Amino acid sequence: MAATRRINSKSITRRACVAFVLTAASVGLSIACAPAVNPFYVDLQPTQRVTTASVEGVEAYEGTATLLTRSSPPTTVSAESGAVQHVTLYYEDPPVEEGGEEGSKAWTAEDYFDFLPLAPGRFLFNTITWPIQAVMDPPWTVHVSDGSFGRQSWDGRHDAEPDSG
Image (tube, rainbow, N blue to C red; front, side):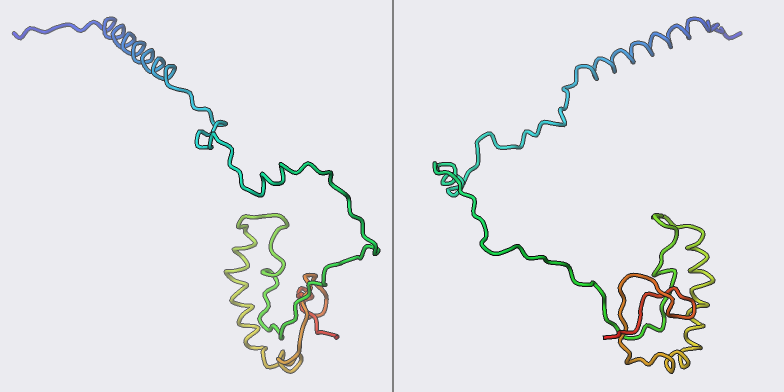
């Protein structure tokens, strides 16, 4: 009969707890003794002051600054209109121009519905009706886009308007 050794479950549990505590203590000590990193200190900065001849000349000046005033009245300057002139756009895509939900930077169900069934259908519709569109709005007509949507087309969601000037 082979000799069998009885394993005491209490001794195994004690040994496992002691090994765990010793391992945790050694890891804790190694972390506590590690050098701390200061993220607000950059040791790559030069210790000496960097300067140039012009800086030294300005710092050496001992005079007083005088305030100069204009003899002419101030002028008012405003930005140009920002409108863009272009030829007729037959393949405009209103969802691309308008965008989706306001302020949303993610893909939504509206986007998937637009580019899967609607965009190819809109392209096919524009291709079939191009001769009619070309008669109603000749290709040499100059249009202006100013960034605001108007009601000048059949669905009223386009930016371009015929140039009046």
